[in-house]
Amino acid sequence: MTMRELASRLQQSESAVQSILNDLGESCESGDEALAFDASELVALEFGAQVKRVDAEVRKDDPQKEVIPLRPPVITVMGHVDHGKTSLLDALRKSSVAAGEAGGITQHLGAFVVKMSSGASLTFLDTPGHAAFSAMRARGAAVTDIVVLVVAADDGVKPQTLEALSHAQEAKVPIVVAINKCDKEDADPARVRQQLIMHSVELEEIGGDVQVVEVSAKQSTGLNKLEEALLLMSEMMDLRARTDGDAHGVVIEARLDRGQGPLATVIVRSGTLKQGAIVVVGHQWGRVRCLRDMTGAIVKSAGPATPVEVSGLRGAPLAGDSLNVLQSEDRAKKLAEKRQLIMEQDRLQKRSLKAAAATPATPAAEDEGTDQAPKAVNMPLVVKADVQGTLEAVLEALESLNNEQVSVSIVHSGIGPVSEADFLLAEACQGCLIAFTVKCLPSVEAMARRAKIPLVHHRVIYHLLEEVGKLIIERAPGTSETRIAGQAEVLAIFEIKGKGRAGVGAAKIAGCRVFEGRLLKGQRVKVLRSGTELFDGKLSSLKREKLDVDTVGKGTECGLIVNEWMEFSVGDVVQCIEEYKRLPTFVSSDGKARIEC
Image (tube, rainbow, N blue to C red):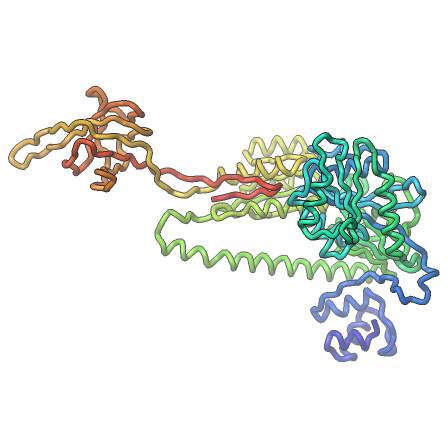
């Protein structure tokens, strides 16, 4: 973009833009001179505008298209939990990743290059199928060229199958359906096809453009047909990318390594990423110290559609951030700092909006003067995970546990092991420590145990949400409600005469048999006759065989006195009303968890 175009888009004068460029040390003598991307973004941020770099795609009418080399397609594998996505990839690359995943489900978004039997290279992304990892699946669809939708032949289309399908359709990415587990006795591929058609998936057999391949990852059958379908789709798309010039990529995953520091898994979109390049990745920057491929081998450069692990960044970026190569460390540092400031301002604004939205509900509850809407208590959480993408998914799942009685607040989150600083923060706010797929130092575990700070440590998100749900229920104040504890029928009436003319101490004893539940001394009771309520009072005396008792159970005969009620009649029903606190319940269905009040 030229300086004149930039000034026009920002609705600013050229002199104002020129002034900022001079402060940045950028020489621009003419308004028609093209600006570097980083300079354009810094100027835009100074004026409060947001900038998004669009990956330069090779246009079909580009006269130089034929000299631009073809690139491998980026293929995302999506589907429901336990439908065999990772197992299918294992069969393709003849490895065994699924066996190492906690609980048999994928917790991360992994990138792999698979050499097919035909000699072609395909880049695969394996996305988790659990509902909590929706954002990760959406991110996978955003960087992919082809989606392989895996559906189990014995289970059919499920909620996450439809969710993955919607992500692919929104991203306008072509789909190839792989019906897996066709080796099972109860496999029914025809039913799966019918379900897909019912959800508006236009299969080839009904005149659409969605190919369907029946496979078995366990028996390694149908893989050749799947390979042919993917290669055909790739050939039809004619994917090309420039290998010259500075690299542009997308962060798939980020983590902290004790020995190497922040590491980011990046898929290069265009250009060539080389060792020693100065890069800005989201709000982080650094010089590429080392590039490793997915086998862990060190490589000097990476071209389009190649996933590599980048080390040398000053901090861990966010999954989904763009990687751009800059020419100077000073410019990279300025750009990263400006992005960090914008991100922090957005975070504070969202927090204030959230607090403002929750404030109006408090006075209304006070005006009602009832216990039916108890004041919500706070549940502070300190959350640590192993990689950035997983952390985002876990935070989203934990925040979904917010309810009317307990407000879940994330006071701190990060990647890496649980440290002593994390414990001190949790102790200060009387919160809970969450460690998902990361280690916790024995010393920190001991401190948490002594301080009675809950430490939730899991590798499977189902179990994590279930345990946090129990902690939330324990903290919930509950809702005051009443229920019928028991009912008794009046069989006989005995009168106690009072003393003196005033008859002080006179009472009527109702001889009853409990036919449901139990009666409790001191509790509220109702007297009913023919279903109509006659009196509401307190059960002041309860006797069984002339002995005072506190409770009488079903099938037992007893005598009772109700304060201020003398008009008992044989056949009346005495209901014992018990007050109790109804606590919320943890509900998990269709892979999603929530707290119901």
